[in-house]
Length: 348
Image: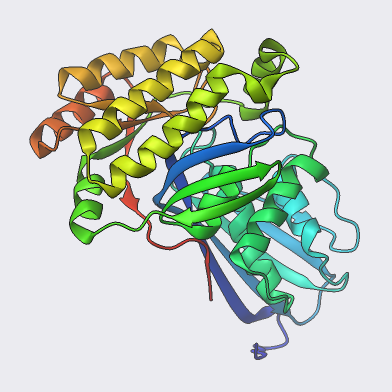
């Protein structure tokens, strides 16, 4: 980083960028939790990315970390020598996890096109991108797995939230992944490598629909934990979710979209059986509309609940997909443009 002083005023000395994808279609979700103990998850990383930009300030002024939440047109400051968790604890805790020098002066800008509470792992992507950018600034060389692990510990250790492991791993690694959790929170990531033709067709068929209201992942976890009891590891519903993750991997490798659609539907049905609150009436309405336009599979993303988003797999007819998205928009639901992300977190 090189200094750039103009008339003695504080100016930017250097800039670090980081982007990280969100994830959709998490087949086997819920098995990546502490109470499931072991799990298998299939998911797909997609654009829109979370974007983080870190700039070092030079010149006169007190040491501070200035956070700009671009989506909300809101800014606030942190004391790098005494980081307190305020209105945005995930961001504050992610910054705290890096252990920056107490005398630094930084501007941090955070942006995401995905709405908050969309059940697409956006908070995990924020943490991964922020950790990626700040660790680079601090001269720390972290692998993708280390970034994911640190981001996960921010939520479960520093903030005491209920949180599975899949979101951070998907954001860090990108692509289409089959994740196996041997024992919480230790997991391995296997990329599902497919031909370009299959990649393009899958991207063409997928839609992401925000149903118009956010959800609280940690709150939904508490409801399921209370209902599932002490022997969650051997619960047949969780075992079926583990099996579906493996089936989804095989279906995508074989470019068998009909089977993938069935698997998505089966996973959503298991979510209904885990707890009736996981698939709310608005999700059922979105699924009904999608079916009218030829959808062959629907997966309530993430934990589900009374808000969030739905992954829809279409029949391949592009006009029907656009009509479906228009019909959903008329119901005050919000289709979010997506593209499959070949890469995970990128820092430069």
